[in-house]
Figure (spheres, rainbow, N blue to C red):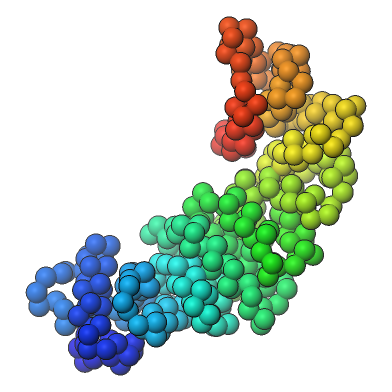
Length: 369
């Protein structure tokens, strides 16, 4: 066996493609691993490509390259997505899980086994040390394809949405953008989307454990990495807004979520901030007395970060009179913040509506969570 035979046998690569494939594999491994490049190592390349991680690095370059046969890209993508959950540590799946899924989806070649592979890969991710973050522009087409699989049951779809959103090793800080895209997917029906949002807002329930054989022994804390309690804050906030967009009564949501202690546990401040986002979005459609009452409720919630956001929202619509209420806030940090903010306003440093809107969209600070 040598690298040429390996590529011919497993990828059906042509004689013209093989030199390019060898070049791409060598470049991928040399730039990202300790692979000893140089003359004489070419014939050992095929041994490295038998490991899923090295194969993934190679596949990322191949599917992005012009002039390589579609069947070569297809075979390579399917191979990387055949993830074995029983592999030992050191045999981690390759990177590019969403990129390869995306290519298969756009080529109309995505199979149910590929869905299972992506799912297993996401379960693997928290156990890995390498950065597997992929661009949202690759993740979104992968989702477009994977959720069209007719063999995926409803509960599996719901779980996969939540798994993708908790996979920070793959999505980085793009959770809000990806969630917004998922909520607009025609492959997911309105009822399913509502259920996802409801789970995120109200039920911080860990994923079922029994279904998975974890690839390596893990503690309960490590397993909890797959819990929706670890969803990005921006996703929690957006879930409240999407619940209303999907038909949930807005006033019922606002009255309930802006009531002290309605949302308990990790992420409660994010959910309350989502209610403020909803109040902002629907401000003009809510009677004046009602919206003022809701804003006052928000300014009296236990979370400092939420109260601060309420004061900013009040400034946006009601001016400095509402902001002055923060001078009597129970938190010293907020009183000082309001004093400084009002001084700047009095000096003529007025915020535009766009400035306030951008400020309201900022993520909660870690210290405030």
